[in-house]
Length: 410
Image (cartoon, rainbow, N blue to C red; front, top):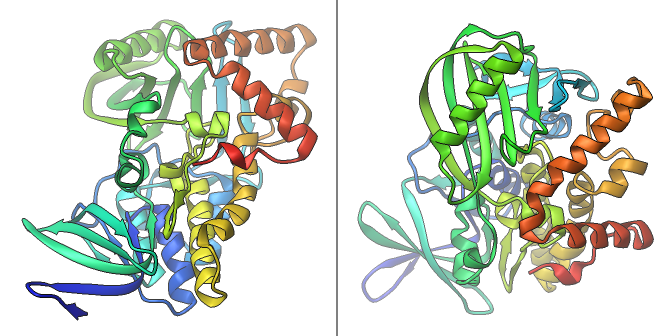
């Protein structure tokens, strides 16, 4: 603790902004290596987190290997998901089980808090990051707690605050205004009748429903969610999906309750425009742009967060440019995440943890061709964003060079 002229400054090796999966994984690596680590969370813990809660097999393995068995209170009911079901406008449905069997259905309010506690880091909740100055040998950080300013001084700062992008905005003030934002919202319904299998996460490739439409069971209710470009009306979009489910799938639900709406941008993972920070400040998790194809961000948050922690540890032990170290290490996670959106990897590889290719092979040739046409029709929703050529070019680069060009990263 350093005493200034009028206030104290807390000195630490690493300061993490956020208290979600990326923050917990990053903190675990730093604490295990013996470095003093503090994480800031603007809300009181345990805090609510809007999320489907469906975890991928890879994320499940990471939690068990790094934090131990999941306590009962960290799970929703049903406590697990067998896989994913894709639905198409032709009314064909394709179900795929997750590799290795069912995975947990996380209650993020308690799962995040549990992982953060298990990381061993000191957590300052009700403390909101407000700004930073990178001074070369250290980073000075200001935050707000109980209506007063608190100050920290860290050798490394890691932004792991998800789509809030508070650390990103501090580094690149105009960044948020230069990217397309999506609204992702879900409402909960009492179930009157629902033929949808409650052991699967259901996703609709239907351009008339929205850019991202899903439903699944949780704690005796049914979630109905929809994602679309910012500026549209959430209630109208949501009601359209509810009516579609009743008309086409015979799903009868009670009135909507408990709406959850969050901003999201999953463009970076589609077009390889990740943001990893500068100087002594690293960006990781969803804040960096990691988002899996079924909008499951927890597994890539855990792995990218761990890599950010490892890069910080490496830069402490063997003095080096932490950005160079981090960008070298994170390239593997970029490949894994962007491959899930890459049409060439989907066509010729197996980038997902549920076997889409194997499921398609079980269909008749006519059905298979129909599915491919419907997926292509669905992708036209993204045409106004001018992502098509970028996606194809990044896919070609990946096939030729074995990687995605790091020159596109901030």
